[in-house]
Image: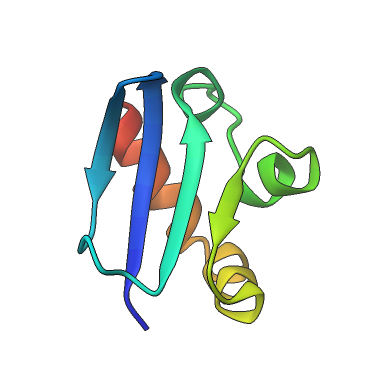
Length: 76
């Protein structure tokens, strides 16, 4: 499973990590990802984190913490 993480800075500016043809794409606004208490699972439950692709794969990366780590890294 390939995953691409995106942090949206502005409508035309995104910070991206991962392959362009990823099977799962996870996107969150910069302001959310920069929050000291950012948790990708909470962002998903609040509707701030968006994804395309397999929901099962998304739940796996949320549970493992990989999504939070990658999105925090991109927000710096």
